[in-house]
Amino acid sequence: SPQLTRRVTCPDGVNTASNEACCQLFAIRDDLQKNLFDGGLCNAEAHESLRLTFHDAIAISPALEAQGIFGGGGADGSIAIFSEIETGFHPNIGLDEVVEKQRPFIERHNLGVADFIQFAGAVGASNCPGAPQLAAFVGRKDATRPAPDGLVPEPFHTPDQIFERLADASNGEFDEILTVWLLVAHTVAAANDVDPTIPGSPFDSTPGLFDSQFFVETSLQGTLFPGDGPNKGEVQSPLHGELRLQSDFAIARDNRSACEWQSFINNQTKVHDMFQFVFHDLSILGQDIDTLVDCTEVVPVPKPFTGTTHFPAGLTIKDVNHACAETPFPVLPTDPGPKTSVAPVLP
Ligand code: HEB
Ligand code: CA
Image 1 (cartoon, rainbow, N blue to C red):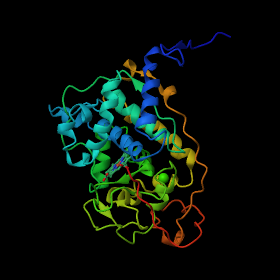
Image 2: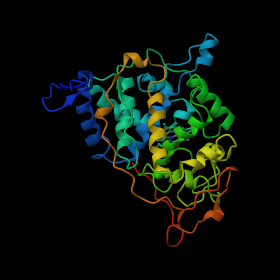
Image 3: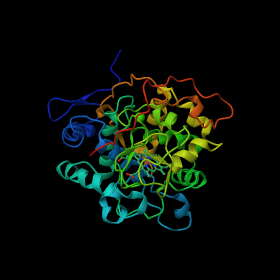
């Protein structure tokens, strides 16, 4: 039978692609892996690059547009193009660093800024075992003006505020269920600025793995502040070294999202598939998909997750705040040994 897609040989003479617009991404990918992600690691820069995709994309508001006010362009690169303005917005605290780390890569390649930000996040995430191969598109329109302030969620916002904001940004697509899917990203994440006395404090004990530990550990009773807390947007966590955002705590327990939250625990297929789905849509907010070329094939296929979902040492089902009335909490083993503390993610 005839081949359905004809592949092109790229000008580099080495790679082939389904569309020649994807050819330029091979060199960018290799440059990022070597020079930003320390040879392909799920490192702090990989985490920050993934966070940047969200803070660029989510800054779009049809609700503001309906009032005749510019609502931002979504995944349009504005956070880097107008970084002087946007990294000064409070929820974008700390992102000036990754924007400046990415800037020389943008300068030495020929990709648009909007495409670059989403691609860098996808490549960074691919270094975290268990992650999906995230979507990569080429052809977004770059921003000509900065997004307005006030569109990026804060950890001290209520579930109502967060659900409303994400629904607005996505014309209703990101409801409370898809908001939980988006928050899968916090499985490879740490906070530098919520408690500045303990930079790099992860949200789960496996910030290098794209697993479901984040959903387990956010379900546990909070017992301590890992640093000098309480800080704004922070609540008690169950483990030394681990930081818990108030927003993650609240969405894990809200009756609209608690069962969805719990459903990710020990379900690696769901972690993988739902985040792959929702990132695809996040990464093109404000853009017209019909004008984009799908170059996902250039994103490395991540290693699978091979660990065991567990309670951290010293903790059991008795330490769970069981918030989903419909379904029992999954049965999980406890890690052997005495209670441990979670190590920081260092730059
Ligand atoms: Fe996220 C981080 C918040 C969503 C991704 N966070 C983070 C933090 C915070 C937040 C606060 C810390 C910062 C510092 O550094 O300090 N988020 C948040 C909120 C929300 C979110 C509120 C809504 C709900 N995220 C999200 C999403 C995504 C993300 C959707 C994706 C997609 N984050 C992220 C990451 C991180 C974070 C990745 C980490 C970074 C690092 O590590 O550095
Ligand atoms: Ca994790």
